[in-house]
Image 1 (tube, helix red, strand yellow):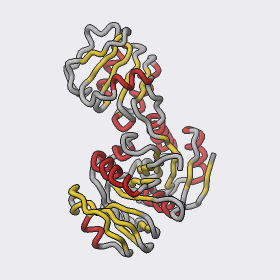
Image 2 (cartoon, one colour):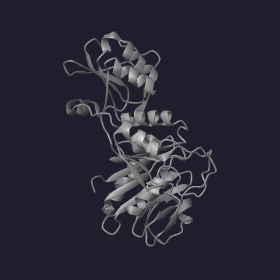
Image 3 (cartoon, rainbow, N blue to C red):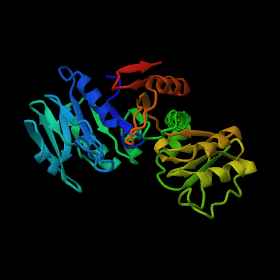
Length: 331
């Protein structure tokens, strides 16, 4: 396998993320590869707890390893071998790791944070796992961070926007962020250890810290950085900060670096204005976006034309787009 980890993330509830997870799990070569699966949210329930719509159940195949909460482990409908009960806790109890001895249904509710996910994945190394599949959760894009998984599938659809043009535009913006280029190796080595604050590298390669804990700081100032080559935001990048950088005459063509795309919380408009003004955004880490899936049906019953949606979205992002319920690919 090209990647040792895969995150499946929905851009909104009911965009087909669980259907995508089910599709992937059904087709993995469990006879020759060791597969482990977990979730950063709760997945596998038959009815969505928010929208009250029907959801496909998660079916594991014999030989798959899985991580879930104590509560949901007790509710499993398969025979399994208990491997570990972690000291990691969730709202539903400790995280349990097991191996499916038969196929069957399961509710997945694993580690509740990116740190917990990384720790669980590291613990799975002792079983020579070839691929860890991570089910993401609404508003927890951290599970898609390159610090967690090497590859990524995005699920989008009518639940994200019932207007096709808006849906394509909003999804394409997320794809643009995922595909941001890496900064150069020297810059990565210099900035990678910095997990807090706002920093800049001058034209001589020297690193300086600004008097700001985050990009959210209201009183952040850029005086005295006329020789800035690279500006680094260790935490979240937001609209207000990006606008201040864009409007500063000394930072017109600056390279702005963030840790990865999950740290970017800017609107498409601010993003486009910054790039149009000559600015560049790069990252320290990136995941490989494998594909995008679509669910053309919204929870309210609004249905978009699948063929047209797949075609327009594929054209906009330059990637395969799949409607898994139709098992249809548009290139």
